[in-house]
Image 1 (cartoon, rainbow, N blue to C red):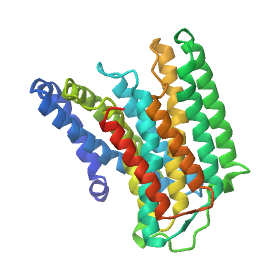
Image 2 (cartoon, one colour):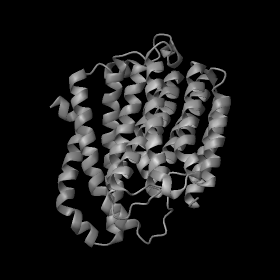
Image 3 (cartoon, rainbow, N blue to C red):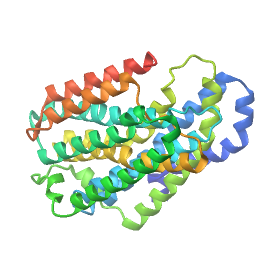
Amino acid sequence: MAFVRREFQLLFAAIVALLGFYAEHSVIDAGKGPALFAAAGLVVVIIMVSQRVAHHAEVLAAKVPDPYGSMILTLSAVLVEVVVLGIVMQGEESSPTLVRDTIYSAVMLDINGLIGLAALLGGLRHGEQRYNDDSGRTYAVMILTAMGISMIVPEFIPAAEWHVYSVFTIGAMIVLYTLFLRMQTGKHSYFFSYTYPRGTRSREEEHEMQGSTAVSSVTVAIGVVLIGILAELMTPMMNHGLKGSGAPAGLVAVVVAAISAAPEILTALRAALSNRMQVVVNIAMGASLSTVILTVPVMEAIALYTGQPFIMAMSPSQTTMVAITIVVAAINFSDGETNAIEGMTHFVLFATFAMLTVLGL
């Protein structure tokens, strides 16, 4: 019973999924309004489940030192994103730019939204917050390289050669991530860690992190399965509700990115308010890098298998926003300290991203 009370969100999500199978066609037949309302409700339920997945990933992460702990958190978020993105891509109304727009949105949410808000609130509470500046620089150059290869260079690749470049992209991402992983867990692991004074976690946080490894592992697996089922129900309802509505073209991509980013934001904000900025940097920058370097090869492989290429080249406004974001991040992460001013610069960039999305750019 104690487990049921703690995991009430998962039980509730399972009930919603069961009801959804019976009511899916009735809701769609009822019209665009009910379908869109139901899709919004399912998004909320998916976020609830992803929060439990993130919590249990955090329990697992607390049992190992950084960078391994942060890797567990970022990989769990990317797993959720790949599951949701893969299912949404199967919808009849899916856009050929959905993969590109989702990755772009995830990077904007993680670097500008998450770091911006965390550094702003943490800076207002603690002033300057220290972290290992080697991690920020390493993440920034890796993200720029991965996005450049997979989302900028494709603009110049002839359409007839897309499959050749897709194979190259898959290989390049695998090599990059393999070497990065070896560096992160090997002789350069100290780049991604920082020693904090005792007591940076509250007693409640310490108690929450004492969960069973086996229980947390099983719960993460159950949560990911539930997310897949709920996403399968959400996709046709959302497509039907948005069809002909005039909604921004990138709205679905933002929804997919927000589902995976929501739990990260809560974890990062709690870390920032506890003056543990290294955790914020590892989660936000690590999630951005993992999103690009792991999602791209999976989706490119699907494109090769189906023979239907995705549009991966970013639009001019997206390329500009990514360039500004990486430059600002590289400057802000060069001194090993964050403050409220640096947080505000990233948050303003996030607001700009939101405005461009509303404008359909």
